[in-house]
Length: 59
Image (cartoon, rainbow, N blue to C red; front, side, top):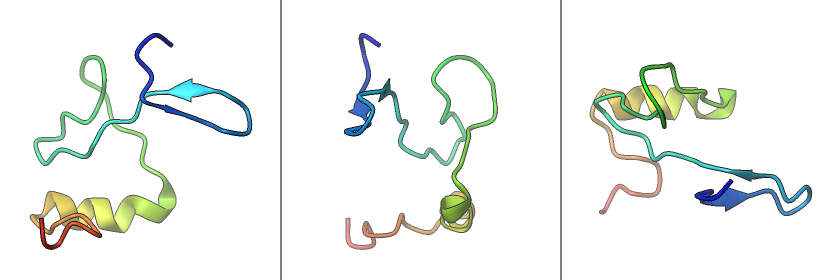
């Protein structure tokens, strides 16, 4: 992938990760639903409601 921004150190698989966006334009191309890991669903939901991201409470 020519514009990957992350890679798996075990498999060398490259991928692109978007930062979460409150306007829900989290996907890379076109309208679709972002894939959210089960461990992050609650944090993502409260972020969409206006809370800061975990670890970013102070900026």
